[in-house]
Length: 256
Image 1: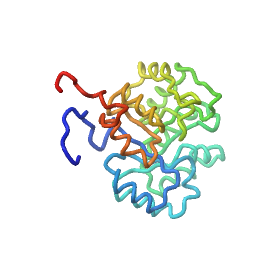
Image 2: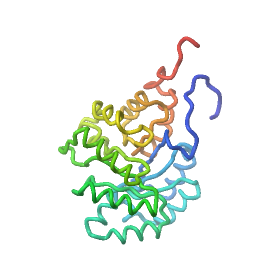
Image 3: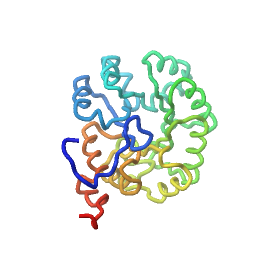
Image 4: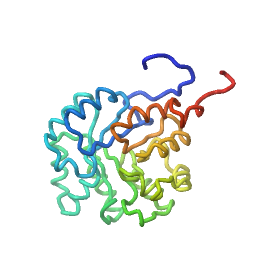
């Protein structure tokens, strides 16, 4: 930090198990990736190349090299995994991970129907090759999954070998964990937390109000994902109580 302030919540240090920030790259150029890292590398734990953008991104290997040089792992969005699976190209997907030296992969079923047992088998197989992030929730805003099923799926996927489970919200923050308005499905989140450790969940929260809600509920070291590149530093100030939305949340008024 550039100077000292008292009563700042302690942030976990890299490599983090909690306080994790996952950033979504939806097609940054190499120069934009370099600019992002010049200001925000310390606050980024992993970068997701959104959905299947890696298929059409020019100079993909060069961009991956930029992130690797900064010590920040990258993974392909879960929709790319689904695109391979639906075409019966799972072995090709595994070879793709090796080709690009990926150390993480996302398993999801937000765009296709997949039997939960089949999904867990994909997790088990990939977990022998990479660290698996498993996404729970549908990209269809009309498909409402009841809390007990979220819990059952998350527990099963963690048991199958997922390092963390991701709560679906898409890049807009208007499905899955959230209503179409972006409002948090609070009862769902609170019920999930009664059965699944908070350190094991990455909550997709692209909107500022959603990030604020999770920080107030779970503290500075909540795991958050689908953060836009230009929102990394603003999110860090939310985590530290240095933005109006969380300004008094971490202050002990009796010591002021």
